[in-house]
Image (cartoon, rainbow, N blue to C red; front, side, top):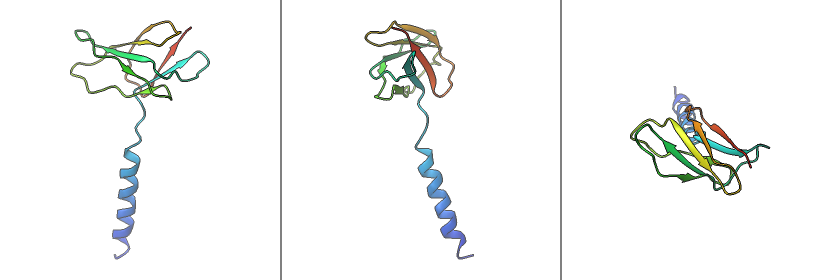
Length: 99
């Protein structure tokens, strides 16, 4: 029985440490699959346009908390065509931008 507490504690610590690594909501890439850092991602709901957020150096972005469910994403980046895509909620949702 003495061994159960340390083992349980190790399992709990491992679960807590693993919980911090959630996949991003959105991944923005070019046609070759390279991430696009600095892409602007604007979540759009039926009656609300949320503020745009910017992807990190890996092309990833976590959407902030929202009052209304997001239906579309408006995505843009310098040198690329703007994209308007349906938001599926898949993690991560991959958005490909064309030049």
